[in-house]
Structure formats: structure tokens, C-alpha cells
Amino acid sequence: MSEATGATGRDARMAGHTNTTLSNRLSGPGLGPGVSGSMIGKATLADHATDGPTEQDDEREGTSRPVTIAYIAESAGVSVPTVSKVINGRSGVSADTRARVEALVNEYGYRKPTGAGRNNVVELVFRELKDMWAVEIIRGVERVARQHRVGVMVSEFGLHDTAAPTWDDTVSRRPNCVLSVAQLSEAERAQLTAKGIPFVVFDPTTELPDDVPFVGATNWSGGRTATRHLTRLGHRRIAMISGPEDVLCCCARLDGYRSAMQAAGLQADPGLVVHAPLTQEDGCVAARSLLALPDRPTAIFTANDLQALGVYQAAREAGLRIPDDLSVVGFDDLPVVAWVDPPLTTVHQPLTEMAVAATELALTLGRGEAAPQVGLEIATTLTVRASTAPPKN
Image (tube, rainbow, N blue to C red):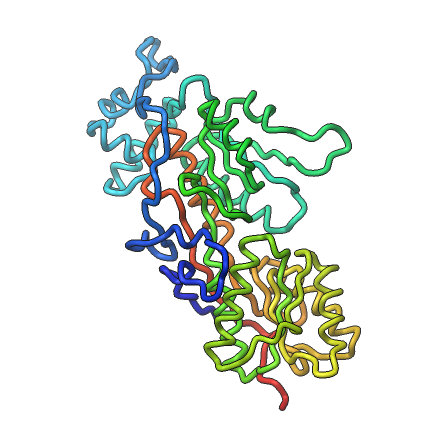
């Protein structure tokens, strides 16, 4: 079962958070199911035509007539705006018309034009390709790229045996747009902007200027919902293994935990909050220290699923049964956690949907169009499985 976190506008009101968070930049009407956001700044975009002729020729009939949107519209017997809607994945077109236009697009091999001198490729940049959730992100990017008939290039800027790639390499490839899972420094953002390469930051770890496009999740609401689930089960000694103190999403999840504790009339004991890297090994180390307390917690909420798997290991070492002796809630909902024993209750972070939204936003900017909103947060939900239960006493 799953429980929506009720995210619209919620993360903008993170109780007790001393830093301004990304969610403070979002307000206004909803953007559809699971999405909240508003126009929070104007991106500076190159003013070039979205739909122009290409150098592709229709060789099917031995003619040199260029394959343009106008040519496809004429062939399909529809208007140019209708073809543009189909190519850009917009609504307002009947299923029959969409199918007819898509068939002609495929038959003629039409490709949407990109900015001057840029290649028809989305570059997806990671710092390190070691986490399981990278697959979910790539899946979402590829889904949108396939729909828009653009290529995808994946780059990793982490540790390498040889010299690591740099943003100079990315700039030299002239991608149509960049989707950065890696945090972008001010200098790196300036470098991409100077070369006219639009970019979107995925799940930012630090605060960004208001004009930097990003897509994230409702981390505060997710943390609050996870902790509220435990308080409603009757837990009072609830610990949290948070992530690094300088990572924005971890701060938001911790603030959500504190908010839920306060709402339940419980004191958030500082001794039950441990900061640790977002790995299984460090989650295990943190859990060992918590479970060794004289008055140990009856439940632990972790900042991600990998830490939660570490809690499982520490509980086994201590001879504790989950959920009989200890309830555990994670965050991310990685595919593997549905198969551990017992299956993990966790906050579902919609990584694929986040990647879809981020890629759509990046491609919009790559076409030189104004984005309908610069910042997006996709709603999280609580997926309840078998790792949580009421405390024994």
C-alpha cells in the first residue's frame, strides 16, 4: 500500500529549517498529479526558431524537397501547429491524427532542429555511476529522448583510472542540453551558459540561484510522512540516521522527521539523530551505535534505502527481529528493497518520473523555448511493507 505525502506547497513550509530550501522557490497552482511548482524566474534563452527547415531531403520520391514541419503537415493534411504538437509531445491532438503524423515523421526520418551548432543529444552527467538509483534516472531520460527522437550520452565525472572527464569535454561535444545529476558549481554553470548550452540540475544537493532550472522531490514531506507512520503505530523512541549535514535533501528529510515528532507531541531526542554517509556500510555503523544505547530506539528512519539495509545488518548482529523488535523505514524505494526479508517500508522517491520531468524541461530549453516553470518538485509517497509494526510495549 502507499500513502501520498500531500506535497503541494508543503515542502515550502519546512518547520524549523534554518536554511532556505529549494521548495521555498515553489508556489502557486499545481502542475498536475504529483507535481508542484510555479514560474520562479526567467531563464535567458537564445531566441531562435523552434521549427525550421533541416538539410534532410526526401529521397523516397527522388526529390530534393527538404523535410520540414510544413512538408509533413501538407502530407498529413493537417496544420503546422498540429504537427508541432505531435513532435513536441503535447496534448490537443486526436489519436488518429497523432498516429498519422508520427508515421510520416518516421517515414521521412525527420529530426527536430537544435540550437545553432549543437548536436541532437542530451548529455546526462553523473559524478559517480555507483548507486542503484542511477538506472531509474537513465530509464526516465531514455523514455523522453526516444519520444523526441534525440540521442542520450551518459558521462561520469567521478573517480577514474585515467584523467577524469571535465565540463570542457562536455562543451566540446556541443550537446543540445545537459541534465546534471552532479552538482554544478557557479563556474561550471557559467561555462555552460557562455557556450549557449541549456542545463537542468537533477535533485540538487545545495541551494541554487532562483534562475537555475532543477527537478527534485518533496523530501520534507517524505520525511514527515515516514515518521508520522511510525508515531501512529505507537512508537515513541524513534531514531533517524540522516545523511551528511551539508546535503540539502537530507536536511529536508531530517526536518520532516522533527516536524512529525513535534506534531505527535514527542521530543526529538538529539541523541537519537546520527549523521552518516548514504551507504549501507555507514548505515550499519550508525545503527550499531543506536542499538547499543541503554534505552534503544524501537524504530529507525533512514535518509535512504542503502542506510536501511545497513540497519537490517546491525539488527541481525544484535539479535533483533524486524519488525517484532525494531521497525525500519527507508527512503528511495529502490527495486531491491521489495525483495529483502522482510520487505522494506520506504518513501518512494519517483526517480524515473523526476528524470522524465527534468529531460522534458531540458529539451524545452534546448529548443529555445521559455520553460513553464524553472523549479519542480515531484511528490513522494509512503510504500508500507513488512518492516514496520507497533512496538511490543
